[in-house]
Image (cartoon, rainbow over all chains, first blue to last red; front, side, top):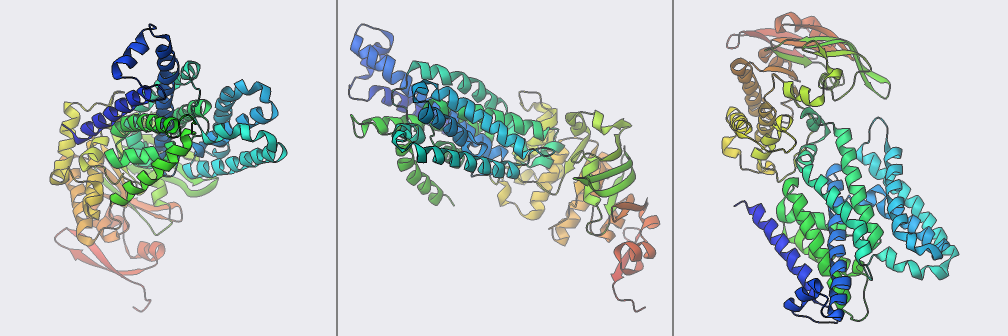
Length: 323
Length: 260
């Protein structure tokens, strides 16, 4: 059997195990059997409530958020042909952050609009950056530079707000760092359609991405319309990241590092890299969220902190081990 | 097979190539030569739809190339540009397989015929033994053969190559050119390329176009085109010609000084 299929099976096995672990672990410790009964029956009200209404949706959301951000990152790294690309590069973080900040600071009563606002802000910023970079087509470098400039502008606006409303800044912390505290079924409903549709889109386009990686001219010679393909990939990446950010806040790192871990494990053939990124993004996120919940129980840490704390050293270890 | 009619090319309204008329015949090796910056690579880009003409037309088999879909052109013309990159861990076989891209359906599965074409391309380029190597483990000459194999797997009537010998040592240069000549003779593949070395152009081409300052100066068979006055006017060198009996053509040795 192909070595890469084995690695993929390993990745998804780890993901499934971490999902069970995440659902079973918490202040209420249950056996595997009790967890299953709690999911499917309401016999034990307390168990059902904790498992079915709290832990199950939260862990599923963690999985989808991790998957979406990682998929978005790996797509952008391919399309921009730049290993440093992540969802931030097309303005997802700055756009979502900007709108979320305006809502949280200027209209705190409307804070239930933060997820929708972040989603719309992220997509609009992507459109803005894409149009600014357009000049007989979009060249990746120009897109990256336009993204940096727009992000700097929106960052300045955020800092401006922070200066004038210092008392309200504390409330924005959890959004800025990224966390999944208190997320449940309604949040899950907001994200899963994007994971499903855009994720399938990525998988269907994986071979086209392989051709695109050979450079614009070679790809054109193979009959690909490069400009349109690039646009489709950017749309996929934008929806994936925007839906994740609207649910979990500005989680950095996942979109940048998980694709690299996947690439180190399985190589750069997107037919394998995409599924590996899905499994790793979901698995790593579920694990980190579990640790964030349990480490200082009952105090919860934002998962973004754990992610960086564990992920960065592990990533450094990987790049030093290779080559 | 390909005709251009007063094709004018450029970037951002700055014209680089003016009113180029080329006629590239089926089954022949056609080479464009000219000094640095004369626009020869730009002409290749115009012909291979990498650059849209500002003015004029490009015809592929009497059809305007702008009216054909990119995929249809890809089934007739393979191109090997200078700017290209391969992920360092891609295997030669996987790179060559991507040459089948224009023939695949939306599911992107390689069928029996695709596999046969890939094997054929690997054999033709003597890359069978290297098929499972990673691209970053190949030498410059091997990598070039792998790219040519990819273009071959596309199974087109014509291949367009932009300076296929650049960065190769002499032995690898000849290896590549002799491979192209063999493909032309045995498989009837039409070849259009840009070469720097005029003597190589003379030896390997059926037809040569000379360009200078964005215009085509002349075109025809090597003996018609490459002579002392062209070399002086276009390339600013003097030259003495010597017969090459082995390849039945005239080669020259150039010199820069004006002492006779």
